[in-house]
Length: 464
Ligand code: GLU
Figure 1 (tube, rainbow, N blue to C red):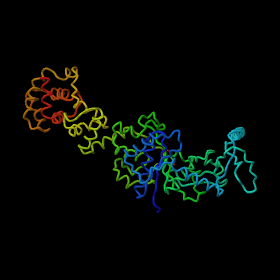
Figure 2 (cartoon, helix red, strand yellow):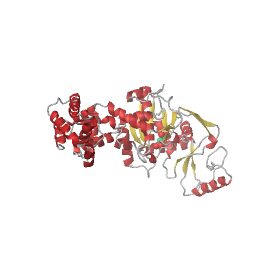
Figure 3 (cartoon, rainbow, N blue to C red):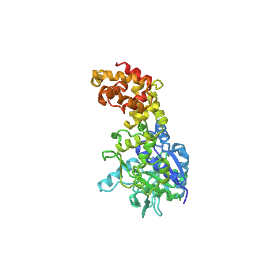
Figure 4 (cartoon, rainbow, N blue to C red):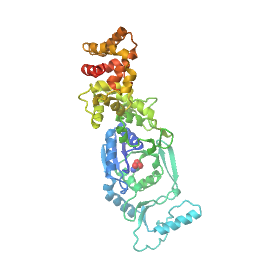
């Protein structure tokens, strides 16, 4: 098999959104699976809408997802000379021609066609044909360049996702490949790039299906090999409508902001339209080992936020505690929260990860330990009753010399409850409220252990 070369070719007109990230992932995984090359190409010819900042956002998103490219980034704006050279060659070969039809003439043509209930299309008036006399060249009006699309037959390809797709050539206009000012047009740049970059597999969104027949015809005219195409079906939002900004986090970096791990997002995106049996959880290495085009579904994939959250928590729990702590720490630091003078962050994170499905939620849950937020008086009043005070005092005294580990602290709690003939919540609830400022907290023995001896004793003593 010819070596696999795939590309991701975003237009920097916004950020790297979830759909784009999935296209990038599939292209990357397919190249990696075959030991091929993954190329990054920035399609920035739409100058007005392309922004430098948007390029950086795409690069940041790719870096965050750790989708490293082997070649590029190539910028189309830097390849203008090459496109123009190919256009000159096509003109010389008769594969393209100058067209002087003015805007007014095109509008008149369109109006006539619409009046006849025909599809508006260029009528080929400047297309050179054997024995045809072309109109006289109007003075002072620079021409556009049109591609001489075949008139008859069909253009077809076996799409690796959608199956065989055919277009009748008669349906395709002679596409403008260079504007009057000489700048090449979108479909043409894509063709030259895919050709020059030796792209073997074009994996992209199915919003490009209508461009493919035009691109194939131009590739054929250039004598280029036709890549294999795989057009990915769109992604629907949780509610079954087209994924849009309404669905909240559309930029990949927003997921970072919201506390998702790139590992989880990668795993999640891989399953958006591709499957490996019933496997839901897999590593990056497994994805690379398993990824193929045969198991991409032709139907639209539906986004499922609950599932993403579940995966995210799974990956958070799977992190070594020190790694989880480091990721939460940078979030807390960004909020100006210093963790040096509070409970050990790795222990605290390990204890709270069961109740938090994002890093953001985990940082929210832990922040209070480091900013010393005190329990609201009404919460204390509700949970710390007068009859529990002697038990609390005994417990605090016992903390001074108990072995500092969860089972020993659990035993001390039991002992204290028995001695005072109290039920668990009588002591556990005030402990939770005093130590965390909240009534909802993890198991109280582990919580006391996590706080550390001195800190636990001093916090509790304030309420005796
Ligand atoms: N630049 C196009 C886009 O962002 C992709 C072109 C392609 O993959 O062929 O939608």
